Image (cartoon, rainbow, N blue to C red; front, side):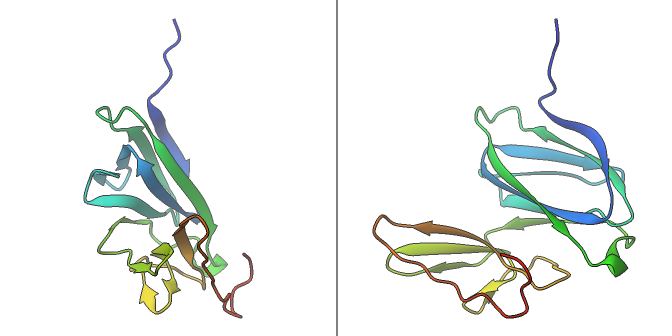
Length: 151
């Protein structure tokens, strides 16, 4: 009988950043720096910003009490001069990720800024990572800064 792991067992990364954004469920993170942390939708922190820098070994295992999982993981390149910096990890929750709401939308600022609201995420280049919810028939707009190189 073959048993699949419940998550992502220990694996290496080097030279980039990941943003893991949990919509449902959660993760338990352990790494070679000795950091152990849990994050997820029903916990104080919903996201993790993991700068892998010069390298680390880590694992992300699903929290066993969470029957459903929905998450998004973005891999972000970093400037070449920072690829061998020491690794670093930050948990993000509502206090680190401001919300901007209007009559028909809500924007959660996961990295960068939107309408003057700035996330505490330690970004290394111009970027914005936004979670936008728009009501049916609603509108939302964003003016792309001239310094941005991709959309």
